Length: 400
Image (cartoon, rainbow, N blue to C red):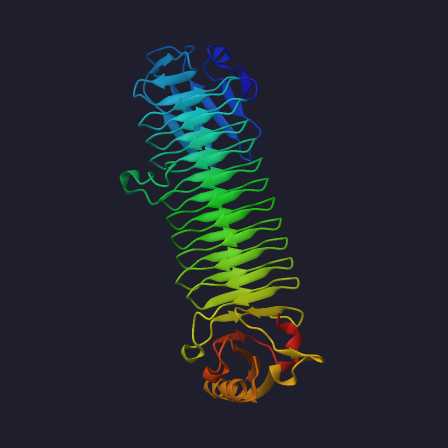
């Protein structure tokens, strides 16, 4: 009984596989890839019906019925037409069948396309191009700067059988580009500076290590930057954006409310969508940016849940007038009110009559911040809520 490490196995060595031999594909995440060939004869038709089981990230693909051939390209082709492909040292170009295939590149820069079916693709070393195609696929880039499309290269194609479960992809080492498809995909960058795009579906995106760029696309997505200075951008849907460790930039830009959490680091949180976002700066000196997307008459534009006195606020198109002695004294004002409606009315007076650009109002245990973005005559253009804070936690120095 032999054990083959994928880093060394070739198509010629595969000819010597015996019943019970195990092919272990190393160099991956904590849970590697194991391929077990089960038969009583070496890669030959027999009454016992050879079967190949591939287990990867908790998913098992069984290549059923009798084995037909070991092709010159190094692929095990089953009687039902499915393939198990093991690449050699050259730059491989291989395409799977319409069934459930297992396609593993070699040390070169491979191009691997799964086609239809629930495929298992691994690039291994080299700068690989992996395309899952239709079906719920599992794709692992391995070492190198890989490009991964879980659906088709034009951004669609994994909706076979009304599939909404989505694909799984992991870039691992290298600066990878990973693009999801129509289903609810799980896309992991691994080490390196990765670009990850979610496309359609309720996707889960994680950059992990490195300075990553994540984009959610359509659906209610969960995006986590991980360690490094990441750019995390939501899309349409009720997205959850988390920066992780590092100085991150989080951006909401869809029509629905999003939740942004900077986590550790000096983060920038941009509330750019049309919904009422919920913002958590996390540890560090954070910057919160806003545009006039919701009028104060309709309510606040966003809620900051963990405002700290060293954090800053930035509003689009706001410029504080100054003279030779510095900031004009009426650029900022504050007061106590009994309700949001009263606070808005008084803030409008401070802006239109006294020329204030920023106004803070204490209402119960919270602070409402109002800003004028243009003509003072029309009063406040935007409002933001600081929960659980007092006027002692904010002043003119917090506006940038």
